[in-house]
Image 1 (cartoon, rainbow, N blue to C red):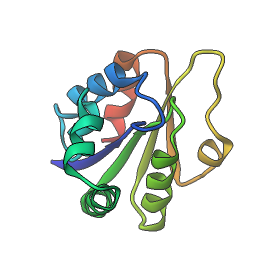
Image 2 (cartoon, rainbow, N blue to C red; image 1 turned 45 degrees about the vertical axis):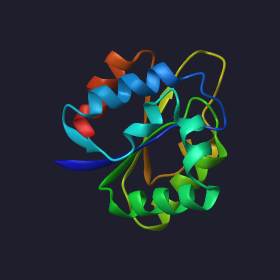
Image 3 (cartoon, one colour; image 1 turned 90 degrees about the vertical axis):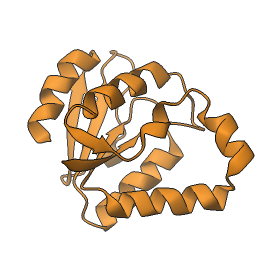
Image 4 (cartoon, rainbow, N blue to C red; image 1 turned 120 degrees about the vertical axis):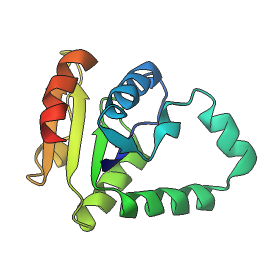
Length: 136
């Protein structure tokens, strides 16, 4: 079973939390999701009580190093997600980007133009899941 590092915005905005939860639920059907906590609605409060920023950095780097593939939902821009993607690329991890098309936003050219990243454009999670499963 593949180990997936699922990435999504936390401090950059939690507007897509329900979408992250749905992606995580579907990923668990075929993979071990190392970062299920991304879908926790109380994540920020929990981390503020129990972890320093350094703790979070060290945990996430350890999980990135231990994963087989990074799956990043990139519709909500996030500096942290961007950093994780750069880290994954540096260490040769396969990266799959998920971007929800809404006719307004566009994926950063630094991501969509990177030949090492595979991008899945989707309108809803059910349709995107069919495409993502092919890569897992």
